[in-house]
Length: 381
Image 1: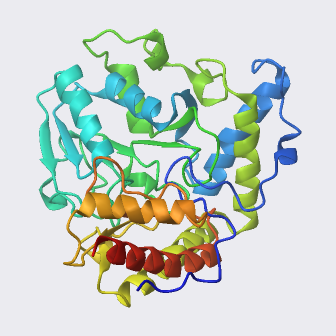
Image 2 (image 1 turned 180 degrees about the vertical axis):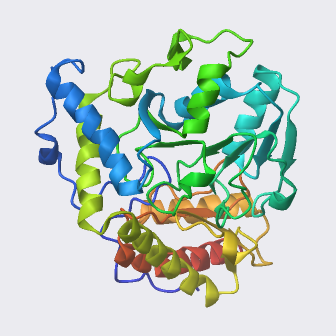
C-alpha cells in the first residue's frame, strides 16, 4: 500500500524549467513603474533598456569591452542571430548532447548548409571535449536544459583559440560561473534563471566576435531581424538599448525588478549558492532511494538548474507512462507543476532548481515524489 500523503507542501509548486518561477518577492505592483504607453525610443524607454543592459553586466561580471544587446525572440532569437551572422568564415564544430543543442545542429547543417563537424553524446553524457578543434568556430550549450548535464568549467577552451565560441547559456546564466574570456558569443533569455517574462533574448559579444562581424559578410541573405551590422560596422545602438524591434516595456520592468532582487541575495554568487542548495536537496533524496537517479552519469557534470531524474526500479513496465503518471499525481495534488521530462528526453522528472526557487520548497517536494512513486507502483501491480 502506498504511504500516506506527506504533511508539508511546497509553498510554491512552480518547478517548471521555462518559464521558470518568478522571484520569491514578486508582486504585480512591483511593476508599477513600467514605462507603459511610452515609446521605447523616448528618454524613459532608452534609460530602462540601458539599465537592463548595464545591470546584466554588473550582476554577471561581464567585461567592460563586451557588447550586450537585447534582441527579439528569446534565447532562440539570440542564438539564431549569432549562427546566421557569424558562421561560415572558417570551419564549424557543433556539440550536442540534448534537444536544444541538436536543434542548433539542424539549423547549421540543413538551413545554412555548412559542412560542420558534429560531436554528439547521449542524454546524460557529454561529448569528448578534449577532441574539439578550436581552429574552427565551436557552437555548444553550456547547460543542457533537457538533459540536466552541463560542462563543468571552461578549462577545455583555450584562451588563444583561432575560432569563435558560440555558447547557448540560457539555463546557466545567473546560476553558473561563466568564464567570459573563453566565450565569444553568449546568449540567454530572461524567462530562465531570473524567472523573467519571455519574448526577449540577450546577445553578448566579445571583441573577437565584433571583429568577425565587421570583417566578414556571410554568403546568405540576412533578414532585418538578424542584422547586426550596417555598412560593415556594428550597429552600436542595439547594444545601448536601441532594440531592433519594439520591446515589451512591461517585460523590461520585470527584468529590472529581478535584477534588483538578485543584488539583494548576493548577486551572482548568491544566486549560485541558492541553486546549489536546491540541487543538494534533490541529491540528498536521490542518495537515500535506490529507485531514482540523476540522468547525468557524472556528478561533475550535474546541472544545478534543470535537474533531470530517471526512475530505475525494475518493476516499472512502461517508463514513459510511469513517469507521466507520477508527474500527473504531483500536479493533481498541487505540489509540483510542469516537472515531466522534456518530450525528446528519456522519461523521468525535471525539477527546476534555479535561484528563484526556495530550498524549503524543494525539500518539501521530495517526500511527495516518494508518495507518488509508491502510489503508482501499487496502481500498476
